[in-house]
Length: 517
Image (cartoon, rainbow, N blue to C red):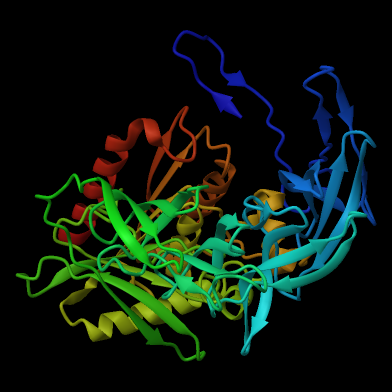
């Protein structure tokens, strides 16, 4: 990596450990426990079935089982489709294997599934997939552990057909587990409760925060430890942000709602977004979110803003005062979630496995064409695509698979132009050990940019998506004698956070020139 100092006559070079896709030497972890009293650190002997295959430490949690304290560690193999849970004892200096989970074909584990592990004296709760009526959903598994610290059984918390994103807490007294789910719609976030085992005060799952009409995207931060249930959470949309606390009675029905912080933007006129679904030719549904722009105009330019990364969602009810870094002005905006996105089970998520840069791009283009047909105010001659990071990859690829001049302009910020140049941990989670021929190379055919104006933006100090990606794309465009605009930011990393105004002004200037000149 290179940085540039105004007071230094030479460039500053430094090495960063960053194993890329297919690299033989990747990260190796070890675990040590430090004793507060003796001030001594002891390295653990991690006893996995095949320790040479497990490279990643996904999570650590202190747990108390049968009155004794242990460190629960979760390990994943290189392809991140197998995980192992171990219990680490300081006295024995060992991490003993407790449970192994092998994910189904085209599924993967993520560290977030193991970050919020909760427990009782004999039980551990964490998130893994489970099958329900032709699909598989992220659900909470319950492992019961005997006094010999061996697993006795595994079962699942009864809940609906939706993906659980995070475990918030566990109430042993009532045998209730509380969690955040992407429900009742994939673009929502709500706090739910479900029976943790027999004897619970609940018989089925229940949404605790669905009572709020204008708060369909929120996150619980804590649950009170006392007899009463008090859930502290933030309302993050679609209305203006505020912080609240809800008190529930013994049957988990609302007793009191206390607004901690009032909405701070009462006078702000918020844009109106519409969310709808579109059936695609593949039989899958696209979820589309649309801002129609200035309704006084008979014809408006439209910007397709994309991301598209696995298990991510562009369409949410999260508060959007302005979808920076692209401003509304008079332009219409479109967001789309398709195959590969989260919140609709593994039926949708698995479709992208081993195929980054394919199905999510094809679905997005088809859905966007249907949006243009449905909204005749959207000017088909003034269409732009914008994306950052994985979204930048999507923006480039969408231009490449569309017909000539379908997109009048494109903005790609820090795109991955070939996932062979990207982080092994991320890429191999979704590509496994796929052959090199499975990787899409955006640098191979850039001829579509003869008909689409391109703005390519990248920070030279980007330690996430290395400048190498944009450099090779620039080289391909130059070798093909294709004009394009580029902005390179010295000493700026992936977010370009230190020069935000310059970035936003650059986008506005480029789009104004593209749409109106």
